[in-house]
Image 1 (cartoon, one colour):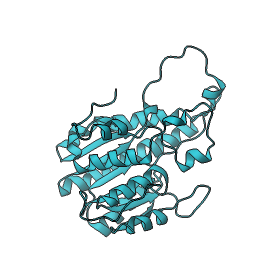
Image 2: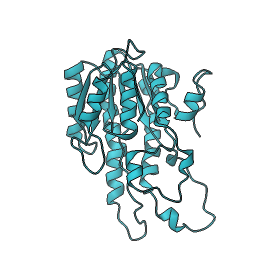
Image 3: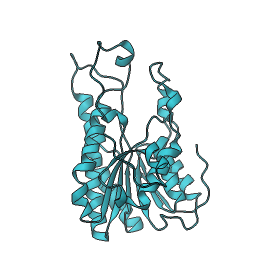
Image 4: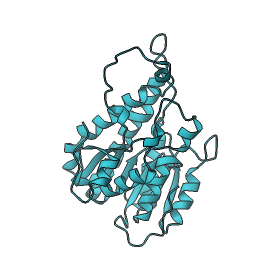
Length: 277
């Protein structure tokens, strides 16, 4: 875990940020980075108690508060509309505003069969990875429009891009991987980002998608390091955290783009990077 220092009057001082999936992994690092920048953090995830994986919303909230800003831990299951409504309402009740939304939470699973399988997992993945973030963007945008603007960051993935056409049939290693619904739903999240950017721009709301690259999280470690994945190219969680912080400082510079975190950080002193293709 990255060490974060106490906050002063950072670039995001007096901002309020909702970070989904922030009980552990990338989401927790994002929450701490935005807190270090001065933002108060609404820590959202399903994990209210420790389970198979380490980390809870309470633990992240305590780490946020140790940096000298406020934290509000809230249970959020993106498959439940009532949870989404409650997060927005309770954030407004506690802080009175919402300046930043980071849609980081996601559900992934082992590969499901196409031939002879059913669409149940795909349905659930769309509910959590697409409809939930879409609904949260809707509700938060209403708040941001009324207060004069804000920034929305959707955490995407390189899995959203089309792979090369196959030369041979799928190997055993390919079939022993995450379900394609992950890339399918991340592609949909990218389209949400680009489809509504112009509408939101009229309300001074920036919406950006950022791909973190390969980051080794607690979930990946627990799932066993697969022989078909090159983990030597893994990014530090600090890269995606720094990229999101850059966007939140000046969201309109990047709005409507799908960006790679590594490129964004590398080019941070040389202007906005080109969007991914």
